[in-house]
Amino acid sequence: MTVKAGVIIYTCRKSGSYNLQQAWPYLVASGLWLLFMDKKTKICIWIILIGLANFLAYTVLYMFLGGEAVNGRVEVGAGGELSYYLTDGRFGRLVSRAEFLYSGVHSISIWPTVGAVLLAMLTLAKENIVSAMRSSIVRGRTFITVLATIIAFSTGAITIWFIFTFVHKLTV
Image 1 (cartoon, one colour):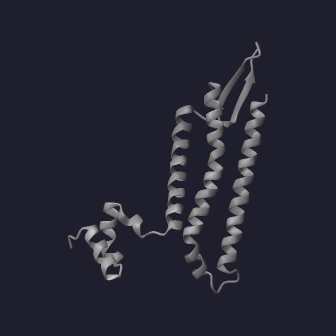
Image 2 (image 1 turned 135 degrees about the vertical axis):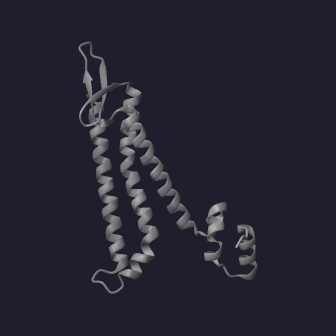
């Protein structure tokens, strides 16, 4: 069937019924699938996409810079000058203060990103989890609340630990 997405959308809106199975390939190809999502779903998808972009940027820059600052070190030279080293677990690479600061801030930003992506995915899966756990010992909504709390506290604690570790390195 070679029907354009616009025609299907117009027909669906005019008739009041949405046959998304028929329209889906055309909606995806044209980018119009966003019209059929509610605001919460759009926000969650954007959080996930931005989080994945942050992970990709961190990975690429970690490889490019040769390490990261939270596990790096700052050394005081004989003349009192500071030397900044990024560490990849084995070796230290001398970098400028700006590179060291950028690496530290980006390393710290990974943990809130992990939390945001996990909470967005949990939000998107909430209805399926609730319906699947109707007859279990723990109700679905309780399970989601406990899981969201664990995600928030653990990623928050790791973020705070990374911040303190990084600030401690800068106050040498």
